[in-house]
Amino acid sequence: MTRGHHLLHSLLRAAVPLVMLVALAAGRSEAGDPTPKRPHLKVLYGRYLSFAPIAIARAEGFFSAQGLDVELVHASGSSDATPALVRGDLAVVAGALRVSELNAIARGAEIRIVADKGHYEAGPCVSAALVARPEFLRVEDPGSPAHLRDARVSAIPLSYAEYVLETFLEAKGLKLADLRVVTLQEAEAAAALAEGSLDLQQMGEPFLTQARRSGRTVIWKPTVEIVPGGQTAVILFGPRLLTRDREAGERFMVAYLQGVRRYQLGKTPRNVEILARETRLDPDLVREACWESIRPDGKINVDSVLDYERWAVRRGLLDASLPPGEFWDPSFVDAANRVLGQPAP
Image (cartoon, rainbow, N blue to C red):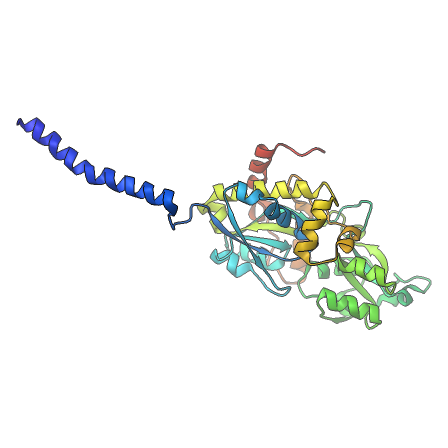
């Protein structure tokens, strides 16, 4: 045998084990490789009407169709998910616009707002409002500074509702410190208002409809009149989807915007069924409630976020306002809209 034949024979013998390993690996994959092939994404989530697009996307299989295994991590009302998002324990946070995320970004954290999850927009119904007990409004000028001073109100510190309330008061020449403030969760505050132990409360759905049903509260000022276009809630990505697996982030956004567009169809029997099951609310309440506005293209109101930042700076909660390029990454909604097509105006 020539030297060339020996070399070829040696190469072939060396290649056989490699081919066998590849074949074995393929066989294991077909038989059910324990290594997950679908990205597993943990998403912070709440059982509220404003989380409807995520609930719809999961129920209708939109996440699965994008090759994603999405785990919804249900949050308590008081939990702050910012550290978990920064660490990568959570891939996505869906919730209210918060100072904590903006502060984290200012300090170098790799998290960004990537989509709209709720904003205040004038329409046929009111999804959030400043409400009052009827007796509080039975004066000649209930909005006068003299009448508002010392009013009893609940406000969660650093919350978007606190920002709305202070914006309302600033227009009257007042501060939150001019009122008697307690800290109650929204459901507790709604009950206190109905009982007469509070005078005013910034309230959203479904508590707004429940309060209206009781007949013991009155919608006084729709929130959209206080902060027009207010960007109350957002979707945020952490470092995993922003850099390590942007493709999974783009696929998540496709499924999310599919959920938003299905949500835009309104109170269809299927949408009501999904939301009633997810929120554990009575279907009649789900149908009666005013569903929050969410933009079908996923874009946010940047100017509204800047206004919120200025409020946080005035309160000493934020060192300085961040420019839009530091808190907002529109590339994911842009990519998703290229896949889905631009929504109808």
